[in-house]
Image 1 (cartoon, helix red, strand yellow):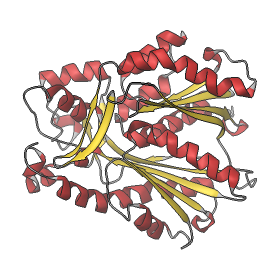
Image 2 (cartoon, rainbow, N blue to C red; image 1 turned 45 degrees about the horizontal axis):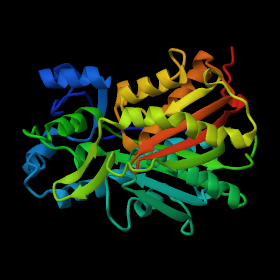
Image 3 (tube, helix red, strand yellow; image 1 turned 30 degrees about the horizontal axis):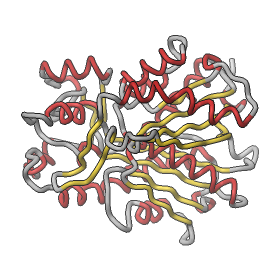
Image 4 (cartoon, helix red, strand yellow; image 1 turned 120 degrees about the vertical axis):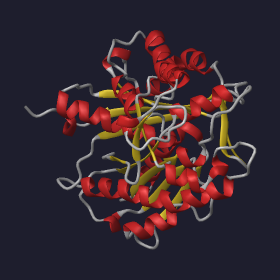
Length: 370
């Protein structure tokens, strides 16, 4: 699978509390935003939110003013275009025509329509009319991992299947609000400084057709775990004011307390004896504190989570699309820098509280050629 990320019609901005600057060089960062950036590790993000859009929709600023309908209308137009740009790159790298795609899995936390972005995306890409479509909406940060797990099952159980997984997030449209006072200001600050916009796409299949197809990572085994009594730790819901939710400060410790068992559950049935430092890692970088906790509890060497840290720093948390960016960064590090490991672990987190875990195996196509 080949996961080139894409951000057309977006602008790059430093991570600020109120991202309304036109270029990185003119960004103004408030003291609270600077503190948030130091805590989160986010330096840059791409956002679709513009001054023009905010001027046209002042209701986006005020939480008390209903704005969901207007937000969803923008997402309905922009999401398919952003998805198509990312998917077009993935299909080009794949090397086969779009009409060979048999299944389409579209993922977003930003939209809530039916049909969703899947139908216009299929039209934009020229997919066959009988392509089998599945949409995952409002699954939170683990949605990208869940979509890859679903694609694995589809590819393995449908002979000759080729599954296009396409994730898109427009948090600057669906969830942006202006500064607030009171109990919600912390969540609002985190939302506006951590989350970014982006889209990523991959092609998943079994039994590669060589030499046309050039597989990168093999998805060997996958599992999903819901940690008991954690229903309110991470939440996401559509309200009249847009996409809203909560992230508990307990989250990093919950991940640390459960990740080792989740990894053992997915590796042990394979009969593979692994040392955590012998693996490559693709972890959803929801927050730097989570990555720090994982490093400590698994005694990982410095740099083992660098693919995740790089994506968090350069793009922020793009919910479902983030894991595709992490996989692409890990691919780059293997191909260009010779950072090699045969076995790896992909991990995602989200509402539930849910932990997605997958065993990956890097193919020889990822080895650096000197």
